[in-house]
Image (tube, rainbow, N blue to C red; front, side, top):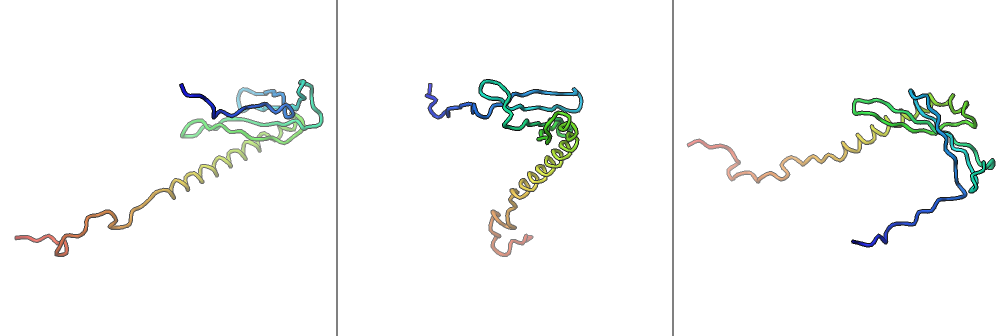
Length: 130
């Protein structure tokens, strides 16, 4: 068995810890509240509380998960911004899909006319009947 020497050391940044709470209506989406805490788990008032939203969009290709940051210092403020967060996430997903389509289209290589074809037959390549 090969040694695993290329695995990086993973350390938790004890100065950047958050307590995560999840709120959902079990229908339209989920909000996450990240409350900054000290290494002892006590609230850290020197850093702001962060909110993010998540929902899913049903597309012809299947379910597309959407995640987005929400402005606001309270859960009530974050809830007010949820609909605009969804719209912004949908717009971003559409833009990314268009860009991926453009990139895929630009990768299509069309050979030049006659490239790779056999050289013409002597005599102009015309069919001659006996």
